[in-house]
Every structure is written in C-alpha cells, then in structure tokens.
Image 1 (cartoon, rainbow, N blue to C red):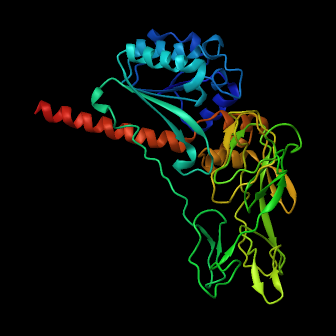
Image 2: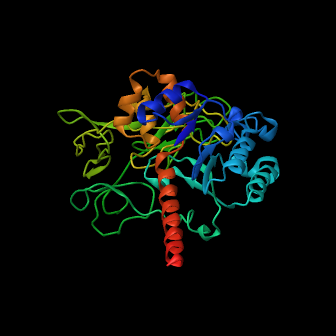
Image 3: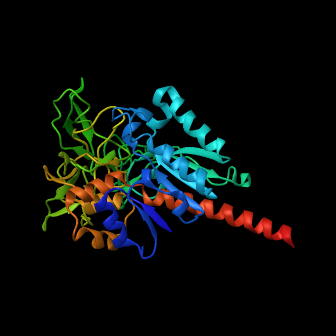
Length: 399
C-alpha cells in the first residue's frame, strides 16, 4: 500500500483515517522514482479535472495539470500493475473534439492493457448526489473484458408515495404516474390521495419562476443575474463544490407543537375549499437532519443560483468551489462540511476524526475534489470478483 498526495491537508486527513505506518509515500507524482517504488497490483488515480472540465478553461494537455496523465502512464508502464482505475469529468470525452480521450485510450492500450470506460453517476450508487464522472478500468489479463463495468441504467418515473395514511389522505410526489382515479376520491381533480404543492422560486427565465417542492435544492446566489441561477433542480441534486452555497426547503407543521416536517400534508379538501396550504393540521414527521443541496449543471457555467431538491432525490454534484445551504421556513443556512462529506459516502466516524483540526474551507475542498466512495467500492467489488475468477481458472488449469 502507498499513496501520493500533493495537498498537505488532504494527506493529513488520509493518515488520520488509515494506518499508513511504513507505507510508501510521495507528495508529487512528477518526482516519483519508480525504481524506489514498491510493486503493486492496483493503481487508483485521477488527474486534475479543471484541464478538461467544461466549467474550467479546458486547456487539456496544454494545461500543466492535464499533463499529469502522462505521469500516471509512466507509473503504469514501469510498474505494470495488474489493474488500474482512473477517474475524471465527463468533459474529458469531448475535449478537443474527442482527440484528448483518444490519446488517453491509445496510450494505455499501447502499454498492453485492455481498457474499458463508462460514465457513472453517484446517484445510482446509494448517495443522494448527481455526480457524473467517467471511470476507466484497465487490466493486463483480457479475460477481465466485460466483467468490471457492466452497471445497468434504470429508466422510468414511478409514482412515489411520500406519506402513508388512509385512502384519500396519502401524499404523493407531483412527478410520476397518477394514482388510480376513483369517483369519490379525496384530494384535488378526482385523484385518490393528495399531491405536494410547490413554491414558486424566482429565476432568470421567460416564465420568471419555477415550482419547487419539499426538499428541492435552492441555490443561494442572486436569481436575477444573467445566468442559470435560480433554476430549481428536480429528481437529483446538482454539483457540490467547496464553496457550498445551496439549500433545501422544509415545511413547518403549525399544529402544536410546531415541528419541521420532511413532508407537508399540503392539501386537504372540505366544503369550504382547500386549506392546509402551509401545513396546518398535517401529519408530522420529525426532521432527521438537514437535507444537503448542491449546485446544478456545472457543465455550462459556474454556479450561484437558487435551487431546491426532494428529500429522497440525489444531490447536485460536489465540486470544490460551490456554496450551498438549507432553507428553513424562508431562511437558508449554509450546508455544513459534514453534510457534504456524507454526500461523498463518508461515514460519520470518519468525519468525526478529521473535522476536529481541519478548517471548514479545507473540508469543503476535500469533499468537492473527492471521488464518491460508493462508486469506487462498487467497481472494486466487481474487479475483485473478476480477479478471483481468473485465479480460480488458473489454479484449475494447474491441476
């Protein structure tokens, strides 16, 4: 085992989380002397995404940060690990009309490796954050082909019930399929059950606003500026960056005792018409903690808008520069580092260990620059299974 990390704060926290005594270490990949480096079976690496990100200047290999890929290729060529896993932003695929990515694949292939790649989204791996990244997996044994990146993609938008209750009192998300129609149904429009009521959020579009629902993400920047700021993100959360300036909307149940609720029983019907539009007399769910909200659509622009997200929906992608928060009864607070790290798959015990002597700005940066733990774990599990199968075949052949 060993690691290479140029950021002193990130290296300090890595050592707090893992037993690194006696391990190989280098603080600059450009100075690695491979003849003094121990042999290893798996290389996990990434090169700075700013050189290829649409949100950055996209300097590619002309950017000194982009040339770090060739340092990775040098390590692979000299040490010949059985496997490698590389990660970068999807902008890598389109940079220089695809020539950059072609160069990367060709370089790795010429070193004798089979290479597979796929764009994976963190939201599909158990964390509430939409974080698309391109993952490249390389292997020397071609029997691994097709066994490490076969993740399926799910489609469809089913009806989601967000609060149970008697017929006519259940609450459903506004998106998705309608529940069954009945002639005497409660709610509005003859539908069985109730539907969440949105809140109009100002944004810089022709319509001037967009409806946001409980838990939707809100960007904390000014919505009137000539950018995408103010747009409400639905279904998944947007990119998280180290600035962290987004939030979520929660309703407050005004029935005694007043409590913050995850879902507001927004609509009830009676002869006098619709009431409970603020959640009065609604069923109450105690809040289990703040809902993290992150910046959307960094492919087009660096973000500062107002966005909100559903409690069950994935967050926006975590990056190193965005600012996020949580809306509580019209007030928006900044998202704390713990929430950002959770969105990257960190356990609370890990966060407890590193946050004591690390500034918030450094924690935000580490969350934004990190790789989602759940995704790497999933890839690693399949890689290990493929490796075990190959070893078993080889052992059987020897008999």
